[in-house]
Image (cartoon, rainbow, N blue to C red):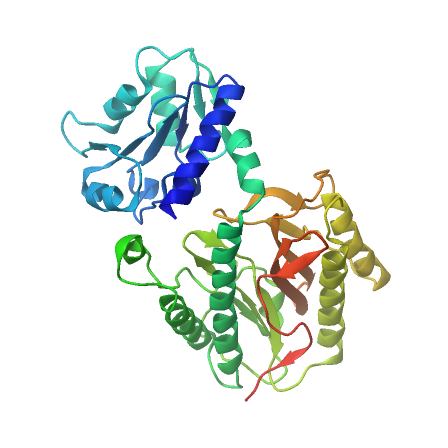
Length: 385
C-alpha cells in the first residue's frame, strides 16, 4: 500500500509541474489516505485538522496532532511529520506556515471539502492570496483504478457479500431491525479479519465494520436512508439494506444494496422491485468503454418510463477511496467511460408511504464491458425463515 501511495504522490507532483502548481494542501481524509497511506479516526470533527502539503519538487509534509503522530509515523511512507498541540505555541497554523514557506502567491487546496476552520485561518493569515482548487488534478488521477486498487475493492466485495448473507439469514417475522444490523457488523468484521495480519502496516487497519446500518422495512421502505430501529418485521414486509457507508476495506468504499421480503411478496412490491432490478441491469448492460456516462443513466430511465415509474435518483456514482468520486452516471455528465473506472450502479423507486424497489452493485469497467465487484442474487429475495 505504501509503495502505491508513494508512486501516486510522484505522479501528482509531475502533474503539478505541468500545471505550474508549486504547493498543494490536502485536508480530505480520502485524499491523504490515497497519497500518504494513512488515516486517523478522530479528525476535523474534533477540531483537529490533519494536513498533507505536497511540494512540486521537495518531499511532502504531514501535519498531524501530537497525540496521533506515533501512529501516523508508523502508517505512512512520508518522513517529514510535523506535529502540533492543542495548547501552547505549537499550533497547526504555525506548522502549516512552515510547510507553505515565505509568502505564497497562491494556495492550492481542496475547495469542495476544505474544513471551515482551515479556510478561515487561510483567509485571515494570507489576506488577498487566492485559494485555487487542486481537486480536479487529483480527481483525474483517481478516476482510473489500478489493478492493485481493484484487488482491494474485490476483497471489500467479498466482505460485503458476507454482510449481505448475514442480513438475509437474520430475517424472520418478529425479529427486530437492529438485530439484523448486529448480524451484519459481526459477519463483515469476521470476513475482513481474514484479509489482515497483525504485522507491519496491516496492524493499523481495523477489520471492524461500522457506521449506522441503513435499513428500512414495511411502509418505511420508501424512506431512503432511514437507520435500523427496534421495529419488528411482519409477514410481507419489504426490507431494504444499504451498505454504502459500511462496505469498505482499507479505505476503499463500495455501493451495495438489496431488498428482501418477509415470508412472501405482495404483487405491488414485486412489480416495483422487478422494475428496479430491470433498470439496474439495463444500466449495467450499457456500460462499456467509449459510452458516455449520461447514456448509462438514460438506459435505466427508459425502463422506469416503460413501466410507468419516474425517479429522481442518479443511476450510479464513481467509487474509490471516497464515497463519491467522478464521474457520475446521471443526466448531464458527458464523461466517456474507460477501463478501470469503478461505479456503484443502482436501481431505485420509492412509492411514498407504501413501498420501494431498490438494488445496487459495484462494478469495474473492463475492456469489453463490466465485472461485478459485489455478488448477491439479483432477483426477488424472500426471507429464509
